[in-house]
Every structure is written in C-alpha cells, then in structure tokens.
Amino acid sequence: MIFVDSGGWFASVVTDDDDYEIARIWLEANKEPLFTTDYIVDETLTLLRARGENQKALEVGNLFFRGLLAKIYYLSEEDILQTWKMFQQFSDKKWSLPIAQANLSAKNSASHMLFHSINIFVNSER
Image (cartoon, rainbow, N blue to C red; front, side):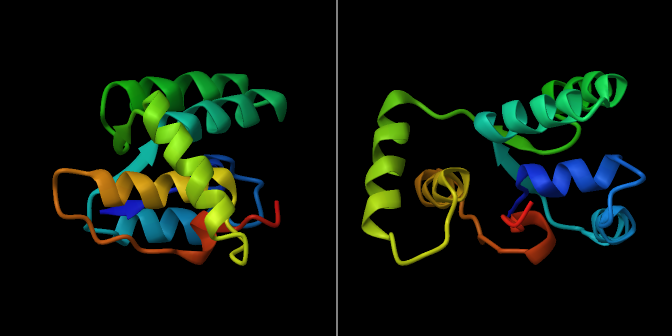
C-alpha cells in the first residue's frame, strides 16, 4: 500500500496547484492500493475549505468516506501516543506528525504493507 499525505490529495484535485498534472498522472497510473489516516482526511478537507475549495472539499470527503480513494486508518488514543513517541525518537528525521502516523499505521496494520515515500505526496515544504 502507498501512503498519501494531504499535499498529494490537495494537488490531485486543485487544478491550479503547481503539482496538479504530476499528481493526476501518478494517481491514474498507480496500480497499488492507497492508504491515509483520519488525520490526513481532516487536514485535506480543512485545507481545501481554507483555500476556497469548498465544493471540492465536499466531493473529496464523499469519496473518502465511501471508500473510493483510499483505505482510511483510524488512529486510536494509543496510536497517537505511540506516534508522539516515534516523532520524538526520530527527531533527526524531517517527518511531520502525520508522516510519523503513517509509519506507525503501516507498521501496525494487520495486512502486509509496503510503505512508499512518494516525493509529491510527502512534500512538507507547503
């Protein structure tokens, strides 16, 4: 499975985003299942709305919650605390908290996941 961060979701639906074309091409060509976390869904929908893309936020939210975009990993309180520990432990990495959550989600999943870091989808510069 491939983790997709909010930057990737945003770029894939906002046509005037600098990475729109590359995100759409990559998503259309991808054959592996995608996963994200509930925090990323929250962040994505909030970002869309904050940037004036309310209709897209509603459309993407509908796709997320109907299971049509990715498997959503819902974080428990224990997951969040473990993520915090991981975030502190790997302070030498430039991980955002959601990226640490994705690592934990992949590690804790009952199914075997191959965690890929795709540059466009983990671009923390934005």
